[in-house]
Length: 361
Image (cartoon, rainbow, N blue to C red):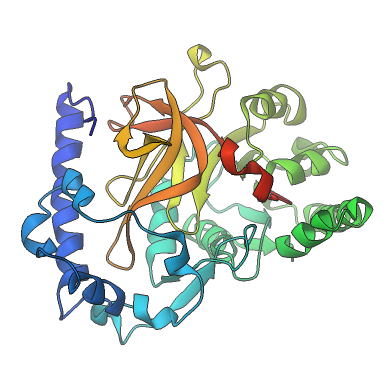
């Protein structure tokens, strides 16, 4: 397995922190006193004791890749760590673009992840005390509570537009493109009503498709928006350039890559050398992203090479080692701000595109 380039002191320190955190997380999830039923049952089928033999991040290769189907269906309680058995449990679901949605339990992770993300937002464009508008998936999606918590953490209030992406996917699969367009316009009209009625809304979360539709109706700067946090599978370098140069007219644009299973990867602030490429870095050590050879998924590709995204989530609430995402990207080297591997220009995995409908994303 290819190893990360640990040439700088910051990278070495980050790797030591990651290895130490892996030991803590493995100890928690495989300890009978604190672990969840799924991982305790899994450990009983292994020929080794994970608590003894997994001493760092690379040792997670001793476990099988985390399987997509493990998170589809119930009982969800098998994922609740015994150490948290008396805590209120949230359950969040993925978009359901490929069948039965995957479910992930949460207690505090969504708050912690978005508080970390908050530290990357420039106060000039995402002012403390400003209100937010969440124009994106609601219902069982993590975004519903996470963006609201982000607004509250920064001292504001979050306004919501009710949006069901599964309905959009359903009508698109049925070829009812006019119905999907009407639903998109319905959500945009709700957003416009809120923006015009509440002058303290200065921050916006939305998806690329909805951002474009909103900007067709109004100049965001004129209705008080100063910063846009945007994420979704349609986030491409072309859209990044289009958003910055044409749609937003000086409004700050923060592209992100995130999902229910990982949390939120932060974007590297755009530099002239990047030419609108979208560079994401995971919230280490709580999650790590690698780019692997699609035909040999235990092998990390070289820097700048294309491969399939492999995700590892490492929290006390949720342990998900070596999960093959439905995305591909180029492997990006560490940078000064994030001294660990990142990814460039994430997009749907080309070999699976025929089976995926992205809807509002």
